[in-house]
Length: 314
Image (cartoon, rainbow, N blue to C red; front, side):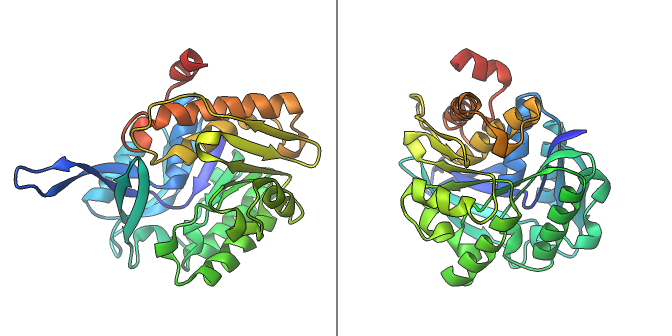
């Protein structure tokens, strides 16, 4: 049984790493992609995960498969396709905050079809997680909805993180339409404080969470950067501030947070809408700690903390 299975993008994050002797900016090749990052976080904490997606038959695709396997993530649902190139993201960091440029025209991650989704893995999953980057293009969009449908049939909790990346959408209105369409399918979802208005029409985190609850999810979490996170269900509202940390790189921060929270749900077998106040606060504190440790290191997947790291910080 898998604690969390995710479908979507696994890609290369090229992150700045100083300058060459000639004064040119150097980039470090880091494995990334939000769904893969979430799984890496869950695995490092002691959970069992599986990834569904597609990479190109190239050096980057081989590197990503090897990285996931080293992280003990099941890759039997990861397809290598020689018709497409593995997606690349170039990340610029300014004061620890990120800006993205993508090489994805099309990237292999957008080319997974519903026929290629391994339903047997979904049937063995406690939680199924997806984002919005697999909703930007066909056939990945249809594959994502199909996976959600099959996972729900098997009794899995559906997790959704919109994870807005403006350069990957033709315009804001298309992004809104497609990203909002998945909300009704989710049992639990996460948005950042920068995505509240885009997804809900409300800028205030509490108003946004309440508006999204009315659309279907049993639980909505809003991450508030250095202010921590807010969790809202029909019965519970919990807000937990983050602890102090030395920010080196925020790449993967939200994904590590979400991995921490999904790990807690899977470990305890709790349905998102049935969280008690005590559980909500405990899970948020745990997830904040995971994210705080992640941002103290470079990259995303390589920066995910172990359970020992988290316990020591807690």
